[in-house]
Length: 614
Image (cartoon, rainbow, N blue to C red):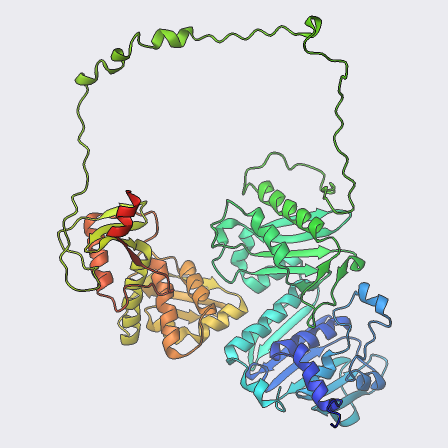
C-alpha cells in the first residue's frame, strides 16, 4: 500500500494559517492598525471601500521599514518582537507572532509602500496570494502605507460567506474603537468611501470615550481607580439609569490590549446586584495594568483572550473597586469611602497562609464547684402582659357582636360558551381576575385560562404595527422641538441603513451629521414617547435582526415599537380593559406566542385543579 501522508503546498498551508488570523475585513484592519501602533505612529488613517471587500488602506506616520525588512515582513513567523520562548511572557507590543502580514498576503492583493526617516527613497512591494510580483524603490512619505485589495479573491468560498456591507463595516468600526480607546494619545481617522466616519484627536481617556460614544455618555460616567501590589485598575463604569438591555459598550484592556473575559465581566455585573434589573447591563471601560509576566496573551490566534496568573485575586479586587465606586458616587448606600486611595485590598490566594484563630481555655474550670458557679438572676416581668390578658377564654370574644359585619365577595365566574376555538373562547359577560398585576385569569370550558398580559399586548401591537408598516398607514406625530440624538459610528450607520423602513413605520428621523440623527416625529400611537429611548429600543432590536431582508426589517421595527408601548408588568387593569385585551388577542393571527416566541397563554385543566385539592 503506498504512503498517503504528504506535506501541503506552501500556498495551501498559508491559506489555512490565514484562516485563523484573517477571518473577515475587520481582522485585516485590526492587524494593520496594531502594526502601525508598534511602529510608533501618532497618526493613523483607515480608508475602506465596499466594507473592505474592494480596498482596505491603512496609512501611518510611524518609523517605517528598510528595504530588507519590508520584504522579510511578509514571511511567516518573521518578527522583530521576540527572539526566544521566554519573551512570550514579557510582551509589551500589540503584535509578536509574525503571522499577520503573511496571512493577509495569502488571501489578497497587497501593495506596501514604506520609508524610514533616514532613507531618501522608500520601498514598494506588490504581492498577490503570497507571490511577490515586484519590489521597486519609490518616493513616499515617512511611515507605512498598506493597500489590501480584493480580499479573499483566491478563496471564493470565504468571500461568499462574508455578511452584508453594513454588518462587516460595523465590525471594522468596532475594531477601530477598541484600539482608539486603548491609545487615546494617537489620532485616528476612518473613511468609508468618501464619507468621514471618525476623526479622533489626541485626548484624555474620558474625552476619547465621549468622542466615540457621544456627549450624552459624559454625565453617566463613574470613575474607577484602584492600585494594589497585584494590579492597577483605572477607567469608568456607567450609572444604572443608562443601563441597556442589549449591546452595551463594554471594554476590558490589559496593558493597552483589548480582551474578552467572561469571569471578570461577572465581577462587574455582581457589583451592580440589586440596583439593576436582571435583563439590563451597564457599560464599562476598564483598563488593567499588570506585570506582563503575570498574564499569558498567547492562548488565542487573535490575542483577545488572556489568562491571569492569579485570576481569583483580580476578580476580588475588581469587584471591590466597582462596588466602592458605586458607593462613593452615592449610587448604592455607602459607609465611608474617604480613605487612602493606595489602600491594599486583601485577597485570598492558594499561596496565602491561613492561621486558625487561637482560643484560651481554662483546663481547671469545673462548673459543678460552688465557688465557680456564678449567680445569674433572670427575671421576666410578665405583669404588664398578664394585666391585659382576659381571665377566661370566653372574654376573648366579648364585644365581637357590636363590630360591623363584612361580606366576603368572591368573583362570580359564569360558564363560558363553547365556540369551538380550541376551548379558549370566552363570553362577553364573564368576569376576569388579575393576578399580581401580571396575569389574567378567566374560566374556560376545559378549566382556567391563564394569560400573560404584557405578552398578549405585545402580540396585538406587533401585528397592528406590522400591518401599518406594510400599508404605510402609520400617522406621524411631529415634535415641536425636534431632538438630536448622538450615536456611536456603528449605530449611526445602522440607523441610516434602515432609515427608509423606520420612517415608513411612522418616524421622521433624518441624518444630522457627526454621527447623530434628529428625531422630527414618531408614531402617533406612542403617547408621550421619549425620542432617545425610542432610538435606543430600535437599535437594540436592529442589532439582533437575523437578516436584512425587507420582511425581517419591518418585523424588527414593529417589535421595537411594540416593546416601547406595551402594557408593563405591575399595571392594574379594569374588567373592560382585560376583556378588550383578550378579544383583540384572539383576533390575532397567532394568539399562542408573542413576537419573541414566548408562550402567551396556558390552560390549567380541571384534572390539574382536582389534583391540587386532593
